[in-house]
Image (cartoon, rainbow, N blue to C red):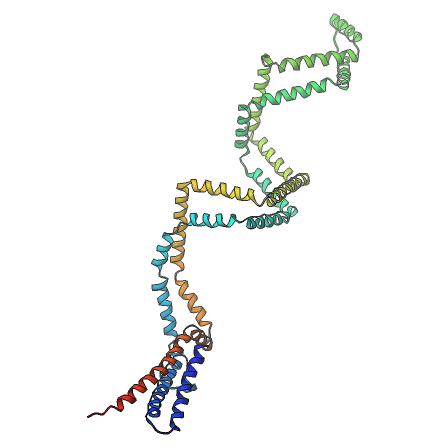
Length: 416
C-alpha cells in the first residue's frame, strides 16, 4: 500500500471514529474513544496541513506561509548547488580522489578483463574485418600518392641517399651489384645473336679504317682474311675472358672498377641539380597512373592478407589478438619510469580539467532544475521524499489518538 493512501486512510479512520462516537450512547468507553479520535483527527489534519504546505497551497487556498518549496525555489537551488560545490563535490575532494588513482594500472586491469572474454575478442575481430573490407582503397589512393610525392619532393634526398649509399657500400652491395652485372653481361655475350651482332659491328667499323703505307696493306690483308663470324667469335671470347678476369677477387682491375663506381655514385649523390631532378621525376612518377595502379594493387594485397589473418585468428578464438595485447601490456608494465611519468601527466591533466570546470557542476544542476516547471519539481520532490513525509501524517494521527486517550484519562483524575 502506498504511504499516501495509508495516510489518507488513517485520517479518514480518525474522522469516522470521532463521528461514530457522537451517535453512540454516553458511557466511559465512548468518551475515552471520542477523546482519542478527536485528538487523532486534529493531529492528522495538522500534519496533513504541514506536509501539504511544503509543496503547495492546502486546498488551493493562498494561505500565508504555504507552498514553501516553490516560494523558496531559488534559495533551495542555490543551497543545493553550494552544498555540491563546497561540501559533496568540492575541488579538494575530487583532487585527492584523483591523486589516489593509478590510471594506467586501472586501465590495464579493465582491458585485461575485457580481452579475456573469448566472445569479446571474436566480436572485435569480426568488426575489424568489416572495417578493413570497407576501406575505400580507390578513394584513399590519391591521398596516398599525394603524400608519397610530397614526401619525396620535400625530403632531403641528398642526406637520405648518402646514408643509404654508405650503408650499401659498407655491406658490400657494390661488389654484389658489379658481380651481378658481370654475370648478366656474360650471359648476354654467350648468346649466338650477340656473337653475330659483334661480328657485324666489328666488320663495319674495320671497313671504315683508312691507313696508308705498309700498315694499310697489312691491315687490309687482315681484314680480308677474317670474316664477320671470326670477328664476332674473337670479340666474344675476348670480352668473356675479360669478364672472368674482373670477377676474380685478386684482379687488379676489379678494385679500380669498384673504386670508380663508388666515386661516381658519391658524385651523383652530391650533385644537387641531379638529385633535385631525380626528386621531381620520382614525385611525378608517383602521381602517375602506373604508380597509382601499382600502389592500388599493393593495397589490395595488403587488405587480403590482413583479412586472412583476422579470419584465421577469429576461428582460433582471438588468441593472436590477446597475445598481442598481453605483449603490449607486459612491455608497458616493464617501463616503470614511462608509466610513472604518464601517470603524472594524466593525473595533472585531470586535476587541471576538474579545477577549470568545477563550476560546471553547479551550472549543470541549475540548468536541469530551471528546465523543470513548478509542477514537475513538486512531483519530483514528492516522489523522492514524499513517502517519508506521508508517514508523518500517519504518525500524527496515531500519536494524536494516543495523546487524546491520555488527556481524557487525565481529565478524569479528581483534583482533590
